[in-house]
Image (cartoon, rainbow, N blue to C red; front, side):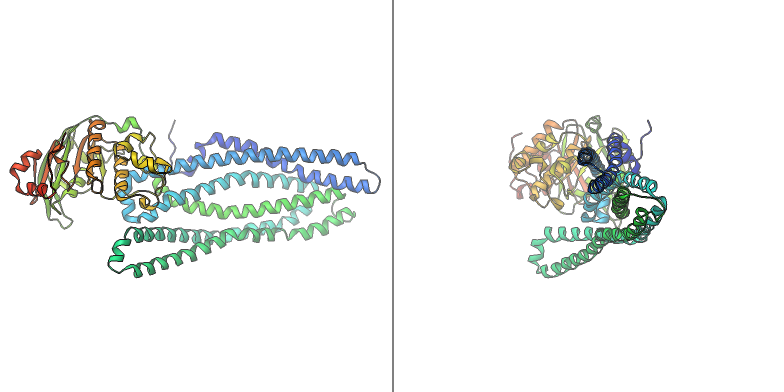
Length: 575
């Protein structure tokens, strides 16, 4: 079967066709049944009138009342089932879209966050999905609650008096014209509000994360004014969007109900035998009640146009993240063990000056190789070159094949953990899985997060806030590490994962890597050398060169490495 494109909104509707079928069945029964209400109300009115003039019987009213109650019960039961299925449909679509976006962020996180900002990306990942799904839910609901109901009411009105029906429908049509004329304004206001929301989130995140620095340099007042300006901008734009989206339905309803005056006048003439059709009291009551229901549904339909426009704005924002990605299941993440080789690799600064020259390194599966050096020696650049994230010369090979071509595939061979784990405003588990299937327990345990999760109210389901604001620096780093371990690759490049953890936790993580990731080639970049005696090899960067040896050999041959190690008071460690 041909795979449907997830960047087409129809794909998401088709994905849940079973639920939509259940919605269709219950929706048709419910909305067609709505037509029985006005008809029974009209019959009751006529029965009461007959009883008043002595031509009717109370038993008729009793039977009609019972029929009204039973019909109403059936209709409301169908309404409950329809809404239940619609809600299940919306929940499944929401979960699927968020998982797809998280997988997209995993594939293109650095580019998205760097170019758009964390606040904007978070808005796309959470708020825009919610708005888009809400628009899909309303469309699915109103397709039956409005479309089928309107068709039912229209048929009833035409049967009763087609001329009066045509006159009455003029003003509902006007409400649709008004809704269409406001469409672009609603779309523009919604887009501006969402853009302002993303900027506000980004400024808030920066203000929170840099609070200590701002206070130390006396820059809090300036940042507070900037944040207040962003907040006021968001208030204005959100208020404008809210007024347009929330206050238009009463306008549509008011326009539609203008026809009630014509119905009372012309319908009264029908009852008196002076109009287009001969009516009794039941026909007038049925027509009037049916039209009121039609008018309310018309105003809802007009409002639906605006909801669909808001959903369309959200869909266009998240659509780039919905592209096809490979099925990154647990089986595919465990790739074959193979060797990582660097042959005369040179890395350059942005201005073209070399930082590292002719680096040669071989990392076998099961080995953990450390990379260290003085500040600005090129440690991070070397890690980025291994992940093919910066240009370099020389050969970087995996299993004898060019690493660049392997990394360009949808599932690469290098998993990279940078300084900033770029956490999403979601649960710890979702930050680790990023929408991929599987159990994240092992990755969380290997990252030494077990004791931390035990202290949290919801464990791995704990929400961490913007950028992981609810976590400590060490916890954020270990969540990022758990993410890299869960999305397993045959080569793992970990840039300073222990910068905010204690030595005991560092040893615990290193032991877990040895035990559970023995089929991976692991490169550990760090300025902390306490665990380096436990590593298989160490790459010492100095003066643009790389010396590869064991920890002991470097102590004996490289005074700079010995000085770094002694300054940190490194000692013997038990393997």
